[in-house]
Image 1: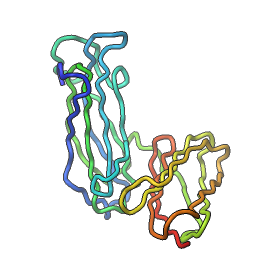
Image 2 (image 1 turned 30 degrees about the vertical axis):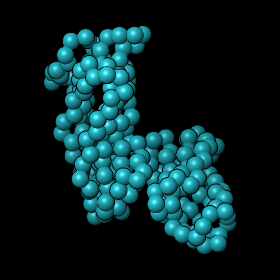
Image 3 (image 1 turned 120 degrees about the vertical axis):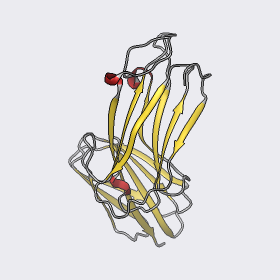
Length: 218
């Protein structure tokens, strides 16, 4: 990425991965990067890691850092080649996709006319990662539903919750956000205007992803 023009993007996309026989799959990788000196805060090159369970129709971000938050070594204008202590290890839990047999992982880099970014030791393991957050307890009822489905959360007091509903084509149908006020919280989702069918509910709770299937019968 050294001296790439601003907003040039490159992606590393892996072949489809079968996670249907896993219990606690995790993505592990190592990266090294430093900013190029310039501007107020230096270059803002960005690394995004995403997962898809529907052949790339929609993507869920599981890692997203840029600039000073991404760097693993001090700023420099010269060509960056990492030393041993310039690498950072990352573990990200994929348990939300443990029932899926067609998962795609994508590493996407966006340049800011900055310095080099290196990736190494990319692997999928069926083990809880060191940085993986515990899976939040999410229950939806009734399921199937006609008008309103209630989403029951446990142990998320003060957490920021994003709720997204996707149809079978991977299209985003509903997107709502709220902040939980207690450890045992219920949230009512109105689906009365939606067509019959099977949908996917995606919950992002403080960057921990949970997926649930919802059937609507109006």
